[in-house]
Image 1 (spheres, helix red, strand yellow):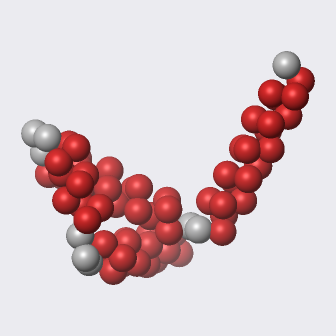
Image 2 (cartoon, one colour; image 1 turned 90 degrees about the horizontal axis):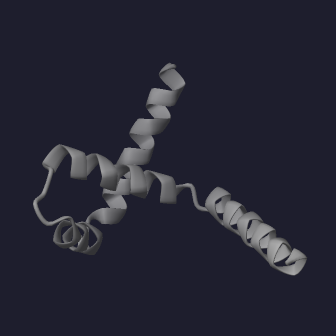
Length: 75
């Protein structure tokens, strides 16, 4: 049981390092949730497929991250 808990802790630490190394993940997820709440699609899975398959997704995430940074500076 201790070995399992140790592995879980190591995995959490690895995940935390990964998230810190890739802050765009947070922007991507925030943008996706925001779009879902704005558009309120009937079929969320289909909407997600279209959203994540978009050729312009990288640019949208960068714009969202820049807006978030500007908002944080204002506060």
